[in-house]
Image: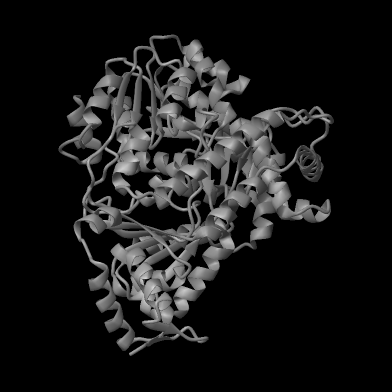
Length: 627
C-alpha cells in the first residue's frame, strides 16, 4: 500500500498534514531522519505509517511509560498489532512479549531506554527483524536538555547491533540548535534528512503579564471568557489551592497532579476532555498524550521550568487552528522562587548518598543485588523512617536517575496481569484435584482471551463481584495458583517505582561534576525564559529565533505587536483611567479593568497620576480623584 492508502485505511484521513509526507518518505526510503515537530504536529503518524509499509518490526524507544501505553492502546483500537516493554514489567512478561515479537506478531514494539540496554533485550535484537529504529523525545539524549536521560546514550550501541542498513529516525517537539546538534552526534545520524515544523503558530496569541495580582487577573479573565482552559501552576499545593478557590468563585474546574491515584487522574482528565469541567488546574504532570483540539486558553500561573517546556505546554492551545491565547502571569518573586527551586532540586553529595542507602534499605536490596529489578517506593515513608525530608529523598532519587544509576517512574500505573504458564490439560487436571479453584479458573478462561499466549490485564474488583468473593480472598487464591506454577500473577502497581540500572553498592560514587553541569544548564534555561517574559519584541518571533536560529516577521497578534499597532497616547490613557476610577475606586479592581494588551502602559500612567497628586491612594487602597 502507498502511504496515503495506509493513512486512509487506519486513520481515516485523506491527506497528510503539511510536512508529514516528506518525513514518511524519508524513513521509507531508508534515510536517517531528524524531525522537529511542535506539540500537536502529528509526529506519531510520521513513524507509524512507515511501520505499516515496511516489512518487519519498528522499534520505538520512548521515555514516557504512560504515553507508550496510550499509543499502544490506540494502535490496537485501529487493528494495528503493537506492544510495549518498560521497567515496570516482570522478566517473565518481557520474555513473553519478546517471544511473540520473534514470531512476527507486532508491527511496532515500544521500549523504554532502560529496558533497551539490558543484556536480556539485546540478546533478542539480532533476531527481531527490526526495519526501523525510532527515538521519540530525542532531546532526552542531550545532557544540555532539562530532560536528560543517561540511558538514551546507549541507543547508538543498539544501532551498531542492527547495522547501518536499518534507518534511525529521531523525533522531538522542541529543541534549540545546540540540542539538535547533540542529538545528531549522539545518535550518529548518517547523511540524515532534517525536517523542522513551523514554530510560528499564527492562531496562538501570546501574552506576558507582569503583575502582583495574578489571582484577580486570572479570575476576571475566566469570567469574561468562555472555552476550555488549562491553568498550569508550579506545585501540587498551589494547584489544589487555586482549584478550590476557583470552585468557590463558581468557575467550573478540576485539578490534576502526580500525587493523585491513577483512577482519579484518569477520571478528571476525561471529565475535562469531555467538557464536563471547563478549567483544568494542573502541574506539568498533565498533558502528555492529551490531544484536546478546542483548548482556547492556557494560563501559566508561574513560569515553566524551561523555554522548551513553556512552549510545549502553551502549545496545547488551539490545536483545531482557531484563535487561542497563551498567557504567562509572573512577578519578580516567581523568578526568585524558580531559582531557589532549581537549587533545591540539586542536593549535596552527602544528602544523595544518605537517601540512596535509605531507599535501598527500605525496599530490602542487599549489597551487590537488585540489578534490573523494580521496586515500589514511597519517599514520604522513607523520609519518615530515616529522619529526612521527603523533598531530600525525592530530589536525591532524581539525581541518581540523571546519573544513570536508577530509573524513576512517578505516578506509575500498571494494572494487574495474569498468564497461564502451563497448558490447558494441566489446568483441567488441577481443577479436578482442587475443586475450590474451579469457579475462579472457569471465570478467568471465559472472561479473558489469550491467557495461554500473553499477559492479560485483569480487574480484581470486577472478578470479586462476579465470583461473589471478598477481594482479599480472591487475591489469596491467585497467589496460591501462582505458587502452584499454574499461572503468573502480577499485582497492580499504582505509585512511584524505581528500577536499578546498577546493583546496589555500599560505596557508590556520584559524579557531582555532571550534576553541577546540569544545574548550571537549568539556571541558564530559566534565564532564557525570563528573557522571553520581559523582552520587548514579538513573542512569536522570539520562539522562531530560539528554536531555529532564524529571524521572523512580527506576528501582529501578541501583546507586544498589538501595543505597537494600537498607539495609545498617555493623554488618552489618562482620560480612560479617570473614567474607570469614577466607576470603581478600589485599586486592584481598577487595575483589573485595564486592557490586557496595554496593562503595563496603563499602570505606568496611573503611577504618574498618583505621583503628581491628580489621584490619591488612601490606606484602604482606594483611589480618589483630586479636583
